[in-house]
Structures are given as structure tokens and as C-alpha cells.
Length: 345
Ligand SMILES: Nc1nc2c(ncn2[C@@H]2O[C@H](COP(=O)(O)OP(=O)(O)OP(=O)(O)O)[C@@H](O)[C@H]2O)c(=O)[nH]1
Ligand SMILES: [Mg+2]
Image (tube, rainbow, N blue to C red; front, side):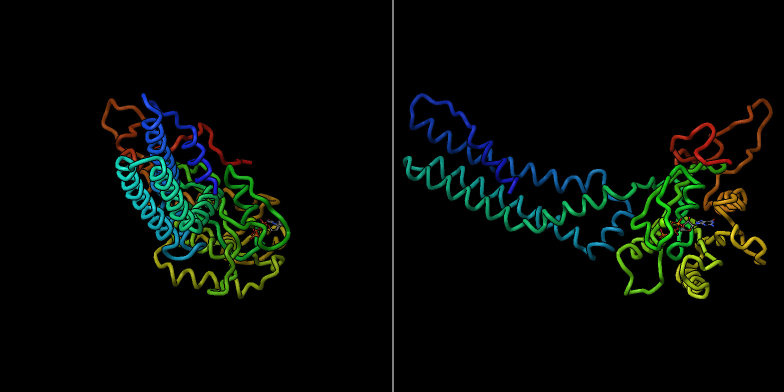
């Protein structure tokens, strides 16, 4: 138990002052209690504090809930907070006993009693500390989305070409491979489209099988539900992904039903393999770049709260009147590249 090791080590370094040996012994015991108790509390607070400062985004909270279960994070945080309060009380009690202890024997017993109870309080939350560490690592491996920037979530069945498309549209370089479930967690790339710096989220494939979904699929569904201002649904008409069109269409229909009002851009991928296909949908290819410019335009047009591209000017004003575009938050306070992060060719 690392926390206790650190605490007891720090306590053992106590060098008390005092004119008599008895005074120094009592002081040493008090310092041991104070230092070990304070060290444990500080460590526990820094663990719980890391979840409160700056706080989780809605998406992060939902991802944690999807992966670890409803209320799991909150329960562990509450149990650690209770342990901190108990340790605080225990420490006060022990300090009081040490002030009134009658001799070296009583002092020794009190320090041992304190150490024992401190250890058991920490051991009681062992599972919670492990869980919080796991959640922390999980979140570190996920992108932190800027809540004020518009987000398009690229989703669809596995192996349909989502990551290849995200690689073309954004600054991200996701792994692309010829088998399903290459992407196992969400990843973000950025693209300057029109006035906005978009977050383009790559997601694992979804088979649309509800409760039987694996962790990667559930993560994708959570991202679609919680983060997508616009959904970019990729459908593979060549079926070289390994999944029939009917199943892919069924997932699209389901999301249309379950997420009414959410803009969904549908693209058919791998158009280089079926160049003569007749369809009303936008056809794209990451091999020939067919359809990519139109797709960028479609995303731009789907922006939920777009800054007006043209601002009526009174005479004497310059071309740019950014304050007329809306509040700073609306204009997105995200640094922009001058040329843009998007691959133009
Ligand atoms: N011919 C052709 N192949 C493509 C195109 N886009 C993707 N592919 C291929 O399709 C396969 C899957 O591509 P990915 O981008 O990894 O697909 P994904 O949807 O991200 O897959 P998962 O992450 O597993 O869900 C790879 O072998 C790609 O090379 C395309 O436009 N044309
Ligand atoms: Mg992928």
C-alpha cells in the first residue's frame, strides 16, 4: 500500500524538539500521528480532487458511466471522501490522547493504535482507489473535447472506412486496417472549416446489437449520443467491410429515430471500388479523394450555430467586424491555423 508506506516513512523522519527526553518522546509521537494522518489525507484529496478540477465534461462523465457502470465514479469518490473525514476525526482523537498520556507505554500504545486504524481506513477503500486509478487512466487515453467547438462524430459499422475518412478530413492520423474493430476508442482530429474549428471524432464501429454490444461499440454510441452536434454516418455499399447494406441501413434508421433533430450526413464510402454506382447520397473515396470537398461543405452547412459569413457594415468599417459575429464563446476561443489543418489535396 503505497500511500501508507509514504505516510509512515514521512512520520518516521520526525525530529522533535524539547528539553527533556520525556518531552521529546511525546512530541515525536504527536508528530508521527500528525504527519502520517496529514500525508494520507493529502494523497487522498489529490486523487479525488483530480476528478473535480477542472471537472469532467458531459462526454467524459458519460463515457465513464458507460464503461464502469452507473454511479461507479461517484460512489468511489464518496467513499474516499468519507474515509478522509474519518481519518481526520481519528487523528484529532489521537492527538488528544497523546496530550494526556501518562508515560512512554501509553504513548507507544496510542501511536500503534492510530497506525492500525489509519491502515484499516485506507485498506477499506483499496477497491475504490484502484477503481479511481483505472478511471483516471481510461480518461487520459480519451480526447478532451472543447465544449465550445462544434463536433462531428464519424460513425457507422466496423471496417467501412471511418478512420480513413477522419485522416483525410482532419489533423488526426488514426489507424486504418482491413479488419473490423481496428479503432477501439474514440479519437479526435481538428479541421478548420469555414469560420469554425471543428472537432472530428473517430469512433469504433457499431453493429447495432444493443445490449450485446462490446465496450468499444458502447463507447461509440455514447460519443454519438453525447458529443455529436453533427453525425457523419459512413455506409459501405461495396460490403467489403464484411457487413450487408441492410444491416448498415438499419443502424442508420435506428439513429434517425432515436436522435430526432440531430443532423446526420450520410456518405457512401470506397466509391473508387464502385465508380458507376447510382445513388442520391454523397459518394466519397479516400483513395481518389472523390467527394471530400463536397463533404467538407456539407459539414460546414450542418453547423448548428454558425457565425454569419457576412456582416452588414456601416460605412467606414473594415471588412472584418468580428465582434458583430456574436459573443466570444460563439466565435470559439480555439486557436486557429492561418491556412487550416485540413488536407486540401
Ligand atoms: N478502396 C478503398 N478502400 C478504403 C477506403 N477507405 C477505407 N478503405 C479500406 O477499408 C478498410 C477499413 O478502413 P478503416 O478506415 O480502418 O475503417 P473503420 O471504419 O475505421 O474500421 P474500424 O475502426 O474497424 O471500425 C481498410 O482496409 C481501408 O484501407 C476507400 O475510400 N477506398
Ligand atoms: Mg477505425
